[in-house]
Image (tube, rainbow, N blue to C red; front, side, top):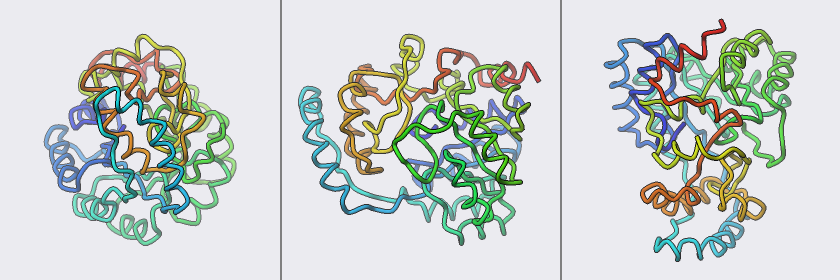
Amino acid sequence: MAGGPSTVELAAGVMQAGGFAFLAGAYLSPDRLRDDIVRLRSLAGGEAFGVNLFAPNAYEPGSAARVLEYATRLQPLADKAGIALGDPVHDDDSFDAKVEVVLAERPALVSFSFAWPPADVVDRLRAAGIEVWVTLNDASETAWADELGVDGIVAQGWEAGGHRGGPVDSGHPQLPTRTLLQSIRALTSLPVVAAGGVADPVDVAGLLADGAHAVACGTAFLRAEESGTAEVHRHELTRRTDTVVTRAFSGRSARALVTSWTELFTDVAPAGYPQVHHLTAPLRSHGKATGQPDLVHLWAGTGHASARSAPASRIVELLQSRL
């Protein structure tokens, strides 16, 4: 839930209701991440929380031309909005510095999305008493997780909102959450957290009954009172129905509400994260600021219609009500 929805207050509300909360570390400066960890400890009065980081993807030289071609397609949108497109640079989101922050601050757990964390990073975190979890979208990746020596796996099914978190972004449809959970559990003894499309207490109870060690919820908290979700995003979650997995906003597959942007550009958007993310960022920020939903990445899982406007603690209680 990086890029706005994740806040210290949201994580604190989840913790106070007995949930295990995560702070999104992506897109923050290392100093801001450190400050958020310190503030969360102060607000929640506990240590039962994790931090999620995006592990950097290797740069593919051939992607530059594809990203520049995509920029020409987006230029009319930018011209109409009076906004300059961003510089499509490749960076690592200050990954090494953020690893040092979590080593110093020692949250209970660090989860990684996108690429695999380097083996030496996994070893250092575990030596410091910090659990390490990785996100998978394909059961065939399970052996890699075992070899890396992590403590657990997040099985993110096809229904999930936002970015596909696994290390291989194929761009093709993948297994739904329940099937993925069962497939991964058959291949490893590691604990597995089920994520994706979890909209209500029936989903939570069902996934636990199917063998998940825990269930992760994201979209369910987008309308929480403490979340940083943009107002235009909150509104569209109650109005739009269909979602699509698209690379159109960031160059990496992610599930969002269908808009004119996804309809126009999903079929032509290149694989190229984070270059496309940086390219489109000014235009998306403009859409948020001016309330134009067709210029905004409206991340949402397939169960988004069940997302409630309520305190985070109440949402946790509701999700647990069938347990």
